[in-house]
Structures are given as C-alpha cells and as structure tokens.
Length: 342
Image 1: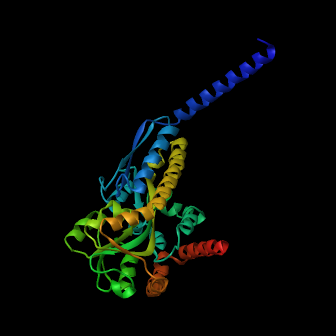
Image 2: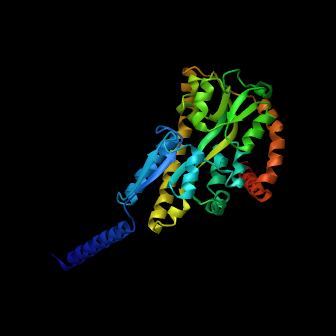
Image 3: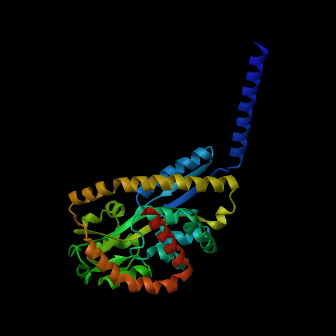
C-alpha cells in the first residue's frame, strides 16, 4: 500500500470512528421512555396518520428509545379531559383543537373568530410564524408546551332538516357546537339554536335527534360517520380549526435537550404529513360522502357575504374578551399576507 493510500485509509477510519462516537453520544442523550398521545380522531384520520409519522420520526432519531404511543377516538378521555390531564402531568401529550383550551388561554379564541382565514395558506403563515410562536408563554402559563400547530381544517355544517343555502336556512336548527363562547355566539347570530356538547356525545345526539346538526371539518365528518345520521352537508367554511400538539410542561422540562428537540422536529414532520394528506383528500372525501347519501351544496359568494355581515357583532364583542393586542397582531399579519399575494 502506498503512503498516500495509507493516509486516505487512516482518514476514512478516523471519520467513521468520529461518526460512530457522535452517534453513541447522541443516543446517550435519550432515555428509554413511552410517551402517550391522546386524540379524539381515528387512526386513519389525517391527524392520526400524522401521529404515526411523528412516532416513526421520534423512534428513528432516538435509536428506538422514544416510543410515542397513539390513543385514538378519545380512548384516554375527550379533548377537555385529556388536556387537563396533560396540564397536571398525568398524561404526556394531547392533540386537540385550540377551541376547548380558551378557558385556560383566552387569547386562543382569536382563531375561533368566524371567517378569519380565507384559505389554508393564510392559516399556515399565521400559525407557523411569529404570531403562532407568540402564544408559547401563554401555553407555558397553563402548564403546556405546544410543539406545533396541526389542523382539523375548515369547518362546515351538517344537519337533518334542510340544506343551508342562505342565512335564513339556519333559523331554528338545533346545532351542536363546541363548548366555546365564540361558536355559541356565532351560530346564535346566524339564527340557529346552538347546543354546547362534548365531541364524544355528538353521534348519539344526532342519532336520537337531540340535536338537528353539527359543524366540523370534512375529514372528521367522514371519520365519525356522521353521514349515517345526517342528510345535508353545506360547505360554509365558517371557521378554520387549528390543532395544538401539546406536551405537559412539567414533564417536558424533565427531558434532555436532545429529547425536547426531537419532539419539536418530529411534530413538524407529523404536521406536514397530516396537512398534506388532509388537503389532498378533501375533494375525494366530499365525493365519498355524496356516495354515502349526504346531499352536498356550495354557498354563493353573495350569501357568504351576508353570513359574514351577520357575525360582525360577534367579532367586535370578542375583541375585548380576547384582547386587542392579540387580535391586532393576527389581523396585521393577515393584512401583510394578503397584500403580498396581490
């Protein structure tokens, strides 16, 4: 072997040894642990598939030491119950819409304002940017760490009485909504009779005609088989539903910096997978719902404008509750996004 080849071989062996040492050190920063993740959706829902992707990512980065176990369909309790368990540290993680969290973090109600976002691009830029990040101290005060914002998507109305093609069609419809004042006030302003109810109770309430309808994103309407107990789906897109990927702060603070970084990185991987699948499938899912018996209708731009006009007092009233600073920050960012899109 020539001296030059010997030098090259020695350098390659040194590099391999260095990489192996770094890998050993990195894996040494991880402890064998099982992390429970609670959600109200099924395994095949885009969020459920995102959780699978997140778990795979964490396992790969930790050398199999971080095991993220998904519990679907409210197996560990509904969003409100599971969120409280995460706040107290008796459960590691929950993926929940932000709406049930407004009791602990009132400023999150800004994302419940009717017709806030016009498309997914706007939602992504607001939630994934500095405005979304600004909520970190508020989550911390509530005993939570938000690893990333995922999505349920734009919400739409189903009911068993009539198709909603104009605002008057909402009159008198007994509609299940989340236990959230913005939703209660929004649907009252639209003329319906909103009924606050835990998500886990909705199917039974629709089946027994305790309520006439409900409002949720397309994937969830399909995932929960609401087409079995509903007749009409009206594409109101009245609200966008962010999902917070929450870790118990008391437990998160006990993790190593490598474990914390891995959870944050893998939450982004899961977020991107969940959004990609959900958005790619929406039209297909709508067609599938039609084939399962739901009568689906769009709403004209003129009627959408009338709905927006009806709910303006709700938005104005909520500014004082949410806080002018928070609302202004979101609206200013939206104005900038819309300006750059022109």
